[in-house]
Image (tube, rainbow, N blue to C red; front, side, top):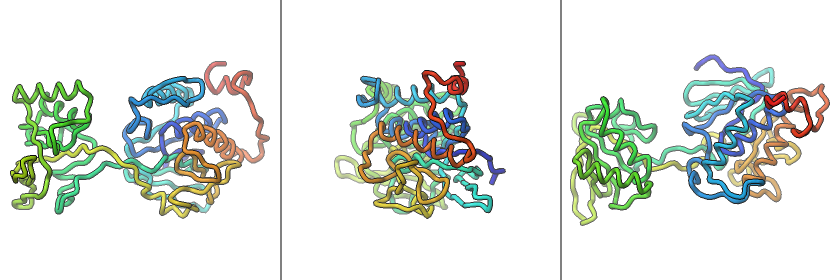
Length: 345
C-alpha cells in the first residue's frame, strides 16, 4: 500500500453527479480527490448513454451523455481535482482521529475527513465470459478489461465481443510494432452493435486478410501443459469446431455491481444507502451519498435530483469541516469569493 493521501474530501464516482459534487465542494472552498472504477470519467452517461440524447438538463434543451460529461469537466476545471481512475474502493476504516482511511484495489489509500459516495447504481465492472475452467487463466492468457498491445504482440489473439471496444481492439492488433501474429474476432453471429464505420473497417481488414471473423458460441476449452490452447465453439450451423489461441481478450461490455458498498456498514434499504435529506448524510458520521446510490422518501432517480443532492451534501461537508464558521449562502452572480474560487475575479 502506498502512503495515504490526506484530503478534506473524497468523492467515489465520477459520473455526472460525482462531477457536479466536485464543483459544489469547490465552490465551498473544499479541495477533493475522486475515485472511479472506470478508466475515464462519466459513469453511466459515458458507458451507457454516450451518444444518446438527454432532454431534461436545466438550460440545455438537448445534449448527449458525452457532451454533458464534457461540459461538467469544463465546469470543475477551476478547482483542479485529482482523479484516480481505473480503481475500485474496497475498504473504509474509521481512524482514532475520526478521519476515514479509504483503500482501493490498486493499493492506493486516502485519509479523508469527509467522504461522498456518488457511485450511481454501483461500480462498473467488466462482464466475463462464463465458461467452466476459463477463470484459471484470468490475468495470464485471458483478459476482461483494458486491452493492451503488450499482451498480444506476436501472439495469436482472439477478441470476443461485438461492440466498439472489440472491433477497435482487433483493428489495433493488426498494425504497429506490437501487432499480433494473427487476429480473430469472435461473436455468436455476424451482426454487431459497433458503430457502422468500425464495422466497415473490420470487414475491410478481413477482406485484406489482416484479421478474420468467426461466428460461434464458446462451449469448452482445450488445455495442454497448463496452458489454454483453444476454445471449443458451437457454430451457427450447430457444428463443433476449435479456435486456437494464445491470448483471449473479452470485450463484452460493463455491468454495474454494488460491490464493496454493501460491506461498509452503512444503513441500507433495497441495496441503496439511506440518507438524511437535510445534508444527504448516511448513517456514518462524515459519509454522504448522492445520486442513484441513495434512497429517501420521494426519491427520484434523475440527474437533476442528483445535482440538488450534491449541492446540499457540499454544505453538509462544509459544516463538518469548518464548524466554527458561519455558513453563508453566496451566489455566483455576485460573490467576489466565489468568483475568486472560479478563477474569474
